[in-house]
Image (cartoon, rainbow, N blue to C red; front, side, top):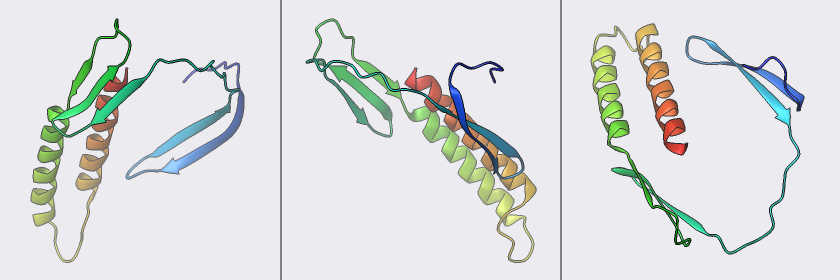
Length: 118
């Protein structure tokens, strides 16, 4: 996290997650408006192909983002969660291991989507 920022801090939130806390820092930033032009981009969201990006510009190279790693990660998560839930006693729905598994899965999904957006 940067220690010096040019923008003014508007809000700081401490959000409880499964087994940890997340600190969210919200900045106020002035918007920069761009002049309208005829550059248009389109994004098609899907499962196997997470994103297909194209544009009407002749020099733009179409982009295809693979979604299968996310499907695989989710399948692994569902299998592990089912196995861990079967080991629980009584009517319990969750445990420390399940919460940790969920947090790790969510972090991996966020990381993959962040890398795909770059």
